[in-house]
Length: 379
Image (cartoon, rainbow, N blue to C red; front, side, top):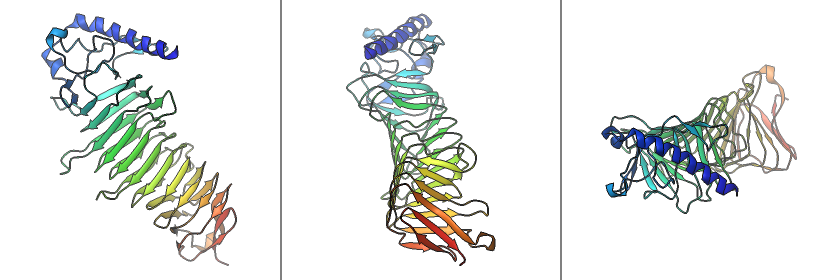
């Protein structure tokens, strides 16, 4: 019943826009406004499928009633309660001929921006090849299908253009136990969360690009894999501003870089969170921040954990389950007369398993307990 009501609401919203759009007519400028391009046909930047299935659709022959039925006007949208304007809402369903879509600038060089992307239940997987900076602002991505949309982001090989997705004050969400969306980032592509954006249950594989959280954004429950090889580009993930890792699962591999030390955290005191961290072959920098990991923390032989003491506070890990240690610990700023004593750099509610293979402590030493690792300065 809920699904039928949801689909009825989408069709009702589309019908209103279709009626208004038909009255407004079609211009040559409208037909050139192709932010979205399919492999075979154009996918128009505005307009309503006459069957009420999608307002982003492929070009149709004139005998089918024409490819375009006007722009999405500022009218109440019944898919929201209370109603909000329907302009900027794209509904991707089974009505379109194109499911492999390229996103680029339009004929006037304008970059695309949309408020909300809706994916009702359908049998096709939409794939988006992002060739420019594409902004999702104020709404987000809502996926109601078990097959999430896939976004591929990559800069030009010669460095002449860059590409990325900016999620600005928007949410990624789904109605089931499946990802909201999947992102593949390559060779300099960027995925940026701004404002109060939330990453939902999205899956990200970063192979040589950048994932960045700004403002008060949160990774929520995202699963992010950060891996540089075989790409010559370094894969980077950073928290800045007052952002946090939420309950996200972070997997850092093969020269990937996780920078968790450049954010002040939501409270401004350097306290941030994550759901799970696996640092199997990259660099994880906490600087002076405290990170609370709800599940487990693992660092393998090729991983490096960096912490710093600025004279008033230092980086540390608080882990809800097991902490498995290996690789290298790099501690800076601790060796000064005023800091003589013991500093707990890791505490776990589960087990402390293993030790760091290599330690760069600048004069200190480590004491390992069943649930703690303590850095000792002086005698």
